[in-house]
Image (cartoon, rainbow, N blue to C red; front, side, top):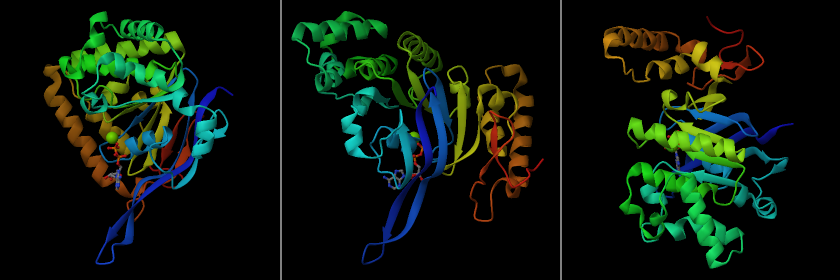
Amino acid sequence: MSEILTIKNLKIHYPIRSGFFNRVTDHVYAVDGVDFMIEKGKTYGLVGESGSGKSTTGKAIVGLEKVTDGAIYYEDQDITNPSIRRKINYNRDVQMIFQDSMSSLNPKKRVLDIIAEPLRNFEKLSVQEEKKRVKELLDIVGMPEDALYKYPHEFSGGQRQRLGVARAVATNPKLIVADEPVSALDLSVQAQVLNFMKRIQEEYGLSYLFISHDLGVVKHMCDNIAIMHKGRFVEIGSREDIYNDPRHIYTKRLLSAIPKIDVRHRDEHKKQRLEVEREYRAHQKDYYDETGRVYDLQKITPTHQVAEKDGGAK
Ligand SMILES: Nc1ncnc2c1ncn2[C@@H]1O[C@H](COP(=O)(O)OP(=O)(O)O)[C@@H](O)[C@H]1O
Ligand SMILES: [Mg+2]
């Protein structure tokens, strides 16, 4: 099989404590039973509004979040077990890029030390070798050599995200979880960072889990996409399935929310959006049960699954 990561019935529930005795009175079902797999060299998109459980899923994959139930297999090893993670050097093979590079890159450290940090954890390089490697990494993301001795605040947002990419690829990983890597950037800068990510993917045969709240951003990056809402998947499919044949009302709503650059059709677009919003309100019952929970996924083609009431609603 060609999959690098397989997620089985993943659940992450956060306890809510309240009252005088600070007892656990309820849970936030941040991730509530999701299944998917990422193929080698491919990009898997995870898309949904804020609060839908995307970051929690991503953090669980890199081992930063405790899993309530389910399994995460990396090349057949269940890495929800910390001792297995250590044994297979999982933290070298799987890296994460965060949205906010201002807080994820240590402001007190020079670029050389920031990018070399993962190398120092896993490889024994001499000072010269290390510097050479960091220079190569800077070059890969289109940054000049003199960046070595600068600090994060001396760069623009787009440059900082590129430094984040350089650090993530330093250990030659096989999978990168990119959590909203361009969401804080202007459109033109977004395209630039995405291009670097794509080029690096081709060069290294990397796999990505690409997290975004915006279906517009992931369109040219992803081979397969999962649409997440309330900790569950409402729809999964190939890029073509999701953009050309969306089935779930929530997916349609996300698609209609993609900003349109073309000003001439603004009125028409607004009308479409209102129509989708009306459909979303009118057909809740076909897509969410009485408690508001997303139904289980149903297969409609070999690549395409939709969460709808048994038999489907048209
Ligand atoms: N540490 C935590 N404790 C309690 N609730 C949390 C915690 N982290 C996230 N949540 C909740 O879990 C849900 C999913 O959050 P998150 O995964 O960050 O969503 P997303 O990345 O899609 O915006 C939200 O309701 C959020 O408030
Ligand atoms: Mg998030």
